[in-house]
Image 1 (cartoon, rainbow, N blue to C red):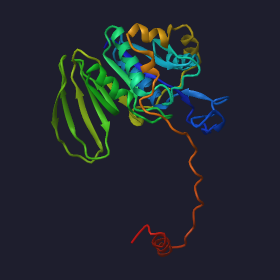
Image 2: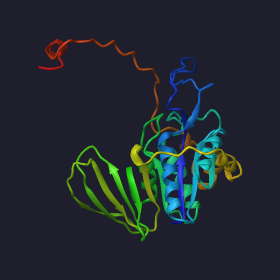
Image 3: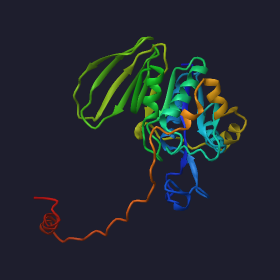
Image 4: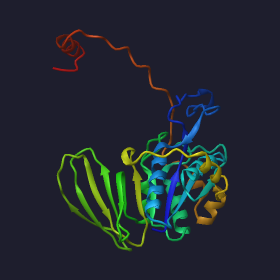
Length: 297
């Protein structure tokens, strides 16, 4: 394996309570003095890339982030975990990446350009979704733009000696074994049904002229904590920063199209408070309450 690209996103920390700020308009969210961190699913992607690097000596892991100046800190976290270098496409402070301004199509278009500019990319690993917008679209869109083989919701990834990737992915139904045979012009697909009770399916991405695109699910691994020596080493690792405007021009994209949302976020609001629960003393009383509310016949 030669190179693994890992797109990562800076989001409000998962442990923080997100608060709506109506003074900033219908889309307003309180971001001042709020802890930001790497999207948890992106952390899993970084960890998996590092584990694959450790198994395949000589591979390079490159972390990529699109966002404001502070995204450099997020990239440094990936470098402290074990990534080799970073690429930061810097946006202006007023450009929101939580689906209000930058949306998956724009991010996937930028990532496509980065993949094509980098040499010898074998694999792109992404989180299955970000916890701010929960879209889960960037990975599949990137694979579509690259015309590359893809697998989503990965629970296990194995790389074969022939450069193929075998991916066990999470499903809501029975397990299905899928064999994907790809060539440089267009992927072809052969399905082999194999029913089990595991709730997963296994996909083999055969080596071809395009990098495999895989999105990572929660059960794939447990991300490591960066050690203090690695945090210090990360400060010396290279991070190439380029403005969004320059990157768009370099890739031949239209800035207005990149920054114009495909979907409009009309309003951001907090969910209504939950009603207090009721305590019942028996199954019969529970059934009576449910019938009273019309929840059971």
